[in-house]
Length: 447
Ligand SMILES: [Zn+2]
Image (cartoon, rainbow, N blue to C red; front, side):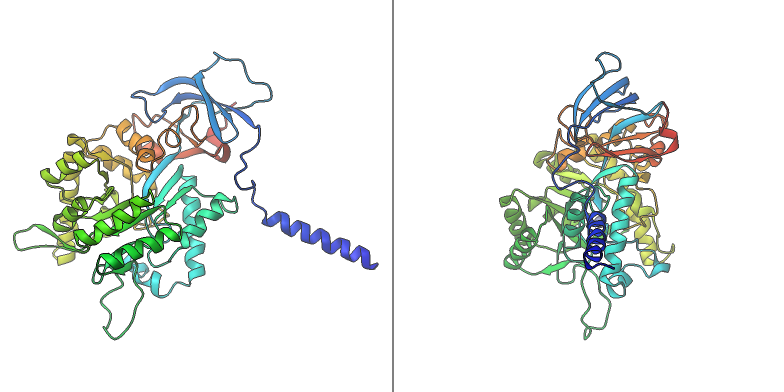
C-alpha cells in the first residue's frame, strides 16, 4: 500500500481517537445559541411557598432566561420544545454532604479500613466516577463533597473531569483531605509499630493547623472540612459523649486562613465540648450536630451557622443491641431527631446533606427527605433545604437551586407531587444540567 495512504489511515485513526477523547462540550463553552422552552405542568421553583401550575422555562445555552405562565409568550424562533407532560419540575437538587471516594462502611464488605488498605487508587477513582454519575442520575446536579477519606486530592481531579465534559457528574464543591488531630481519625486500632494511612490530615497545634489549611487551599479545596469530634459512647448516666479533637486555637487558625481565601469551613461535630469549640472557633457549618443544647442552638442562630444534619445515615448498620457500640448507635438516633426539631423551631439555617458514601451509593440519596419531614419539616422546607438553601450555604444564591432568570439551567422532573409525598423525589425521570439533557426516561417523554 502506498505510504501516503497508510499515513492517511493512521491520520484518520488518530483523528478518531482524538474525537473519542474530546470532551462533549469544550471547557467553558455553553451550548451556543441553543434555545429550549421547557413546559412544566407544575413547577416548584426553589424559593416560592407554593408550586406554580403550567409554566414555561426559557433556556438559552446554560442559563435560564425567563420563567412565565404557559402560552403567554410567543415561541422563540428555532426553540426546541421540551414538554415534560404531567411531571413536576424542580431545580436540580443539592447534597451538601457527600463522599464520592467512600463506598459505604458495610462491615460484611470490609467496612471503612479495607478502602484505604486494599483498594488500589485507580479502583477508588473508578468507583468515585460511578458515584458522581449516580448523584447526577438521581437529580443531584450539585454536591459539596466533604473529603476523600485517604484518597488525597482525588476530588479535585474528578471535579475537573466533570467540568471539562469528560465524565458526567454534578457540579462539585470539594474539601480534599480534611483536618483532624492525632488520635482524631481512623485508621486506628493497629499495632503501634505499624504505620497505617489516615483518612484525614492530622495536625497538632495552630501552626500545623494553618499549614494544613494552606496546603489544601493551594491544591484546590473549595471548602475546608474539620473533624471537631471523633469517638463517641454512652456514659454511666446514659448520656452521649464525644471525644473532642482540635482546640479552639487550632480551629481558629484554620478558619482564619480559609476566610482569608474567601473559603468556608465545615465542621463535623456530634455534641459536647467539640461542638462547642466548633461554634467558638467560628465554623461556618456544623455537620451532623447530633445533640445540640438550647444555648448552642441560640449561638448558631446568632452567628448564622448552618446545620447539615444528615439524619438518614445513622439508621444504617447499627452494632448489635446490648453492645457498647449498639447502645451508642441507638442513642445517636434518639437524640438526633430531637435536636433537629429544636433547631428547626429556633430558625437555625438547615441545608440538606446525606453523608452518602457513608452508606452505599447504590442506595437512594433522596432517602433523607422523608427523615426531614418525619422530624418536622414540611415537604417544601425539605425541598428548599436541598435547593435554594443549599445554594445559599455554597455562596451561590440565585445561580443554583432556583428556577429563575439568571440561574444555571439545572432542572429535574419527578412523576407525581413531591409536596404530597416527598418519597417521589427518589424517582427522578428527567435531569438537565447546564442546559443539556443528561437523562430522560420514558415517563417524562409525553408530547
Ligand atoms: Zn461525612
